[in-house]
Each structure stands twice: as structure tokens, then as C-alpha cells.
Amino acid sequence: MKARELEAAALEQLGYQAESGPARNAYLVGAQELRSIKPVQARTMISADVMSAMSLGELLDYLAVRLNAQKADGENFMMNLIINNTSDKAVIQVKNSVLEYWLNESSTEENATVYMPRKTLEQLALDPSVPTANVTTTGDASLFERFVGMLDVFKTGFNIVLP
Image (cartoon, rainbow, N blue to C red; front, side):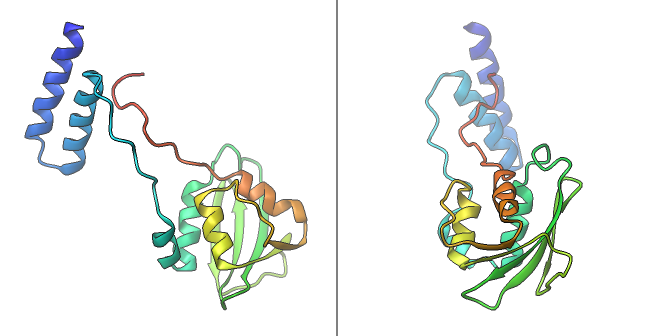
């Protein structure tokens, strides 16, 4: 127990001396964790308000970050995405475990075309387990479900110092 307290004291001092905010936060959270002080409940990564203010390109960038490379390994497909309550559309391609997109484009080489309201896309970006009743697909109907299954849900509240 003494070793934990010594490490916590060292991290606390490093935190007080750190010039950068993120480094200071990491040190102080580590010290708090070692002292077994219950951490403040972590907030979600992004809120629905922020999501609704994003452009379609920013929303697709967010989905690209959430794409799990292991789940997307070996996938090679292209989808047309049509947001049917706005004029937004895009071509989405998953290839080499990477999501790429082209805004305001349509592809004739797509494996599927997906139609959905903007709000449904925002909800899916926040939580892939949201029911997709408002989504209509032409072509390979399972493709969109497979794509949504490749998205990670980020976990918050993980340990910084302890295993």
C-alpha cells in the first residue's frame, strides 16, 4: 500500500508541474485512481446537439474514426448514402479496413443504396444498436447492417494506471 501512495504522490507532483492541460489531467487522474478515490462519471464522447450541428462530411469523419479495423478486415464494398430529408448524399467505401467517402456524389458501382433521414444517421453514429426502421436499402440489404456492426462504441471510465 505504501508503494501505491508513493506513486500517487509522485504523479500528483508531476501533475502540478505539468505545463500542458492533458498531461496534467492524466497525472492527476492516475494519482486519484491509485488513492482509490471514486472518479467522476465520465461523460459521453459526443452529444446529440453537437451531432446535429455537424455537416454530413464531419459526421462521416466521425464514423470513419469509429470503424473497427479488425471488424472491417477483408471487406470491400461501396454504398450510396442518400439523406432523404435534405439534399445531402455521399458515396461510402470500406476497403482495406478504412472508410472513405465522397460528398455530393453517386456511384454506379455501388453494392447498395441506403436512404435514411438525417436524424437516423445521427442516432446510429451515437449508438449503433439503435433500430434502423427508418432505413431503406436497395441492392445488398445486409450490407448496411454489416457496416453498422463494424462501428466501435467507445468505452469511457477506464483505468489510467491500474490494470
